Every structure is written in structure tokens, then in C-alpha cells.
Image 1 (cartoon, rainbow, N blue to C red):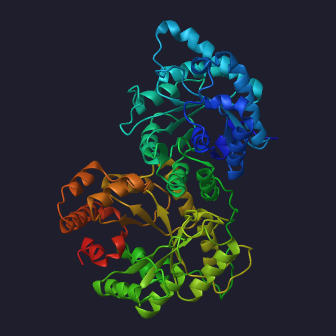
Image 2 (cartoon, rainbow, N blue to C red):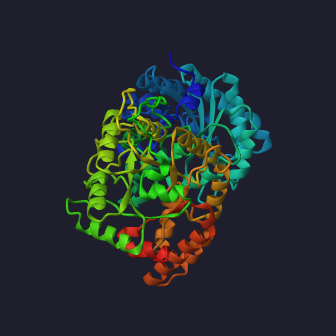
Image 3 (cartoon, rainbow, N blue to C red):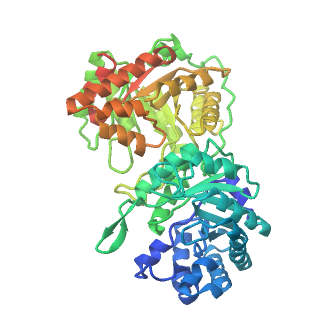
Length: 611
């Protein structure tokens, strides 16, 4: 039996479909047509579009009824067809959705000037909403979706009417880059108001200027409501090309934001204007593997093997890096990305440069699967063999099943690799391999437990491993997470699973980092936190990190400083100085620094560390 929508969205983030009007327009139906009326006049086309979204993997199919209220329809001479259009629309959506997906009854705000009704018109507005909602409910929808609202008072009025029908009510708003609705209501005002409205079960934000704009609005909105949140961005801002409105964004860009919306705590994602079944299909491939959606294999704590020939390696004896951490000394690390070819000469030369400068370890990210790269494990083995500097190997849960990952860990340990950063990993990007899939048998917590079991002489099946591995196990941390409580809980679970150190995302806000460290210092077990550091190289780089890399916070003061750099050299100098100041401010709270080499520039990374 299918769950109630509220039960489902609380259990697992739901994937909504994308735009209807955009796809209709692409099929040659121009904007002077009443798109909602097509549910009656061209039902096959509407059903086909719904079916494409269902086939793409959407969990929720919205009815083609955004403007199917009496006020809007009478402008087309269709005011008397409200019931027929809405029932037809709900029936078509249900036909495509089947019984396994939810059908949302889409309702937009009433009014040609959106919502500027006088007090005397309130009863008329209620009647208009009630008429449309009654028809949608009769047609068989699962919940009522109030979307693209610009006024909190109008949204609450519509929600109170919707509550009369006993179905869940979702209420979503539109904001601009200034965090104001077109009617100049702020994010804070809107979500404070709807949070107090018992008629509203789920809140959200949709449309607007694209995913980046909705990201900043979401960051602000979650401060004012605890209700489940959905986000449905459009495909950026359209441009007119040969008389047609074209959205210049792409499915991969859209997908990257949707993944991060879910990681930040959103309980639903979907698309608005400009998005198509291709957008939703691309997004589904990636987000279905996220820890927040996929159910992982539970890894139990294994009882250690006992016997004279089995000894668990103490922390200080695992590696040179482990010895420094155990002694309370700071570790210096620089990130080098494995090459895109079989020639590792340049990579090895950079590693040698780091060693000569006094760097402790080379950090090797698990490179993006959008293009061919040398295996980071092979790169790590060659760096340690030829340069004699330790590596920290990123190992993510994305690409192999549990058996394969355990084999890699055993093989790496047998080859002498001792330092690992265990990460859940992002689903594969499109790149050259659009059909690549992710595995995600476990997340970072589960794989950390696997490592700890191997270190205590047991594999995932409970079989003895003699001798046990001696892996130094690190995990990721995000001091700038929007849902900091969830991040701290997840971090705590990693520690309980056995994590021995952490590396953060790039830190541009020292105060946020220090607050995070202060919070986690209250745990019963504390591990060293190595701060991620990224020396900015230009104002454009700073803007990109701020607006296009979810989870990274670049304060206004940093952005302003970078904007004043007049030359390339000056910009890089400023970026290094900012990084050095951050390192100085947090030096008493860190277990070391993990410095990225922007665009492979090792010299910049070394300058940050004064080397």
C-alpha cells in the first residue's frame, strides 16, 4: 500500500517532475494558448509529457493546472470549464503516475496582477481556490501543491481553504536574488508566517533565477521554519534566441545543485521553468544514490580476533602521519590530483617538490569519473614508492560494491598505503559517461566501520583477517553546513564508527570553523580536525566558490578584498594572504592544514604555508 505523501517525504526525499509549460512550448504550442485547456483538447500530448517524467524517475507528477482557476480561465473564455479541465488534468496525471507515484494538484496564485486583491475580494478568492481544489480532489490527487506564491497572506488564505479537503498541503514561494518576492516580502517574513500556519504541512521555494538563487534563499529560509522543505529551481534565466525563449543552463548544473539541496536537508527536489524530462532523468541518476535517499548495508561492529598472533596496531604506529597526530603535532598536506593519462611524471615531480619543502603528506582526491584518470590508489603507491612521501588516499563509496571496496582496502594496506580519507562521494557526473551508475552499498559511516573491523582482524562477513590491517582512518567534515545539527550528528556517527581524524571542506570563514570545532570538542571522543584551505586566485574564482560550490561559504569581506585586486599577480597575492590569515586565526584549533593547489599550482599552496 502506498504511503501517505507526508509519511513518504519524511522518510525519503521525493523527486518532483519538471516544467510542463516549457515542454509544451518546445512542441510548437505558443504562449497565447491556454496550456491548461490542452488537458481537454489534446490529452494525448499532456499524458505523454507526464509519462516522460514518470519514466525519468520522478516520484511526484504535478497536474497541468497551475492557472486552471476561474479568474485565469475566464480570460480565455473558459471560465465555465474549471471543473472539466481540472478533473481531466488530475486523471491524466494519475494515469501516468500509476499507484506507485504521487499526484500533486498544482495551483498557482489567483489574480492577473498576481495577488493584489482588496479586503472585499477575500471571499471571492476563497471561492475561486475552493472550486479548483474540489475538482482536483475529485480527479484523484494525493496532495495540494500551492506554488510560485508571492504573498504570504494569499498563500495562507489558499492553504486554509485547501485544509478543508483533508489532503496534505505544500506551499512554495518565488524569490529573487535580493531574497524578496516580487511583492517585496522577505524570506524571513514569508517563512516565519507560514511556519505558524497549521494548514501548511510542507513549505518550499520554486522558480526564481535558477538553482544558485534558490540555494541562497534556502540557506536563509531554513532559519525560520522546521517544516519539511522542497526546492524546485528553474533552468536559470531564459534568453531570447530567434524569437524563442531558451534556457542556457544544462542538466548537469541543475543536478549538482539538487544533490546538494538534499544533502542540506531538503525533503524534495524537482524542476520549474526551463527544465525537461532530460533534466529530471539526469538528476534522478545522481540523487538516487545519495545517502539521504539510498538505504545502505548495515555494518555491524565485529568482535576482534584474539590470539597471540593478532595485535591491533596503536595509532602512533600506523604511519608517520598517525605518529604526528598522536603526538599532537600539526600535519601539513597538499592536494595533488591524479593525471588524466598514464604519464605520471608531472604528478611525481609535484610530489617531490612538496617533499623537498617539508610537506608531510600528499592528499589524493578520488578524481571525477567524468573523464579517464589514473586510479588514485595506483597514484598513491607510485608517489610513496618513488618519492618516499606518505599519501592520504581519498576512498569513496560510489564506484564499487562492498566486496570490491574491502578488497581494495586490503590490497592497499598490503601495498603499504596506511592513510585513508573515507568519503561517501558524489554520484558520477555526466562527462563522457552519461550512463555510468553509482553503487553506494554503504556511506562514509558504514565504510569507516568496515575499516575499523579490518583493523581489528575481521572482514565484513565476520571472517578472521590475520594479520589485521593498520589503516589510519579519516573522514570529511563541513563546518559551513546549512543544517549544522545534521552535519554534527553525522560527524559524531563517523567518530563512533572509528574515525581517527577529519579533513574539512575549504575554510573561508574562520569563525564558522572555530564554532564547529568548539561544538565537536564536547564529544566523549575527540579527533584531530585538519582544515581545508583554498588560496583564491581571482575575484572570479571567489565568486565561483561562493555561488557555484554548495557548502562553501565565502564571506562578503573576502569577496570585497579579492575584487580590489587589479592584476593577476595581485589577485593571487591577495588570495594567499587571506589563506594565511585564516590559518593563523585557527592555528590553535587544528590538527593541521590541507592546502589545495588551485589549477595544479603547487607554488601557491606552499606560499600559504610559508614554505
